[in-house]
Each structure stands twice: as structure tokens, then as C-alpha cells.
Image (cartoon, helix red, strand yellow):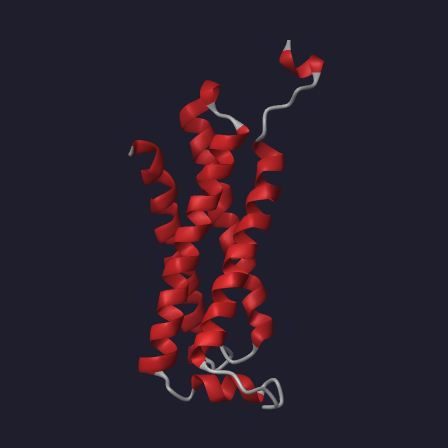
Length: 150
């Protein structure tokens, strides 16, 4: 249980930052521009980075690539699931005009519903998690170089 508390905590914080960023964008009506969602990858990557960094600090000698990878994946999955749930709630309950406005940025030629958009948000978050975790683990993996192992 102790090994799960760290990534879950960082996942909660990362999702809170993602939600806050989305709400700040909505104040300026920029949340309908998909280009601003690229910053979500940086937020998720930073959350994964901090979770893996702290995990390596806590485990020090017993830290392995698998342990770090698991920490990063759980962090990103928790953040993605919570942000996706928030996105669905926002789109259906808070701002029902959000989806039509979002589709107008794509020239309105697509016939999609909220389920498809929510699915795309979830898949993008999970893909970002995998890529960010693989990138972060390159920084924290133990080297097998002979000169460093002495």
C-alpha cells in the first residue's frame, strides 16, 4: 500500500493542476482552442517526473526501472482518469455549449458526440502518460556503464 500512495498523491495533484489550467483557459474562452492542450503534456510530464524523482529518493538502493516505470504510469493514469471525469462533467453539466464551440474550431464538419470527445481526451492522456514515463525513466534509470558502477 505504501508504494501506491506516492503515485496516487502525485496523480491527484497533477489532475488538480490540469483542471485548474483548463478552468483558467475557460475564463478567457481559450479552452475551445485545441492548441492550448499541448501544455497538458508538460503538466503531466512534470507530475510524472516529480513522482519518479521522489520514488528514487525514497527507495535509493532498491529503485529499479520497473519500480520507476510503475510509479510514472500510476501517476499519469490517476491524473488522466480524474481529468477525463472532470472534462465529461464540465462538458455535460457546467457548459453545455462547450462541445459545439469546440467543433466550430474544426469547421464543424464532424459528427461527434460527447462520448467520442471524452474518449479522445482519455486516450490522449494515457498516450502522454506512456511517453512521459518512458522519457523520464531515461533520466532516472540506473546506468550499467562500468565506470559508473565502481
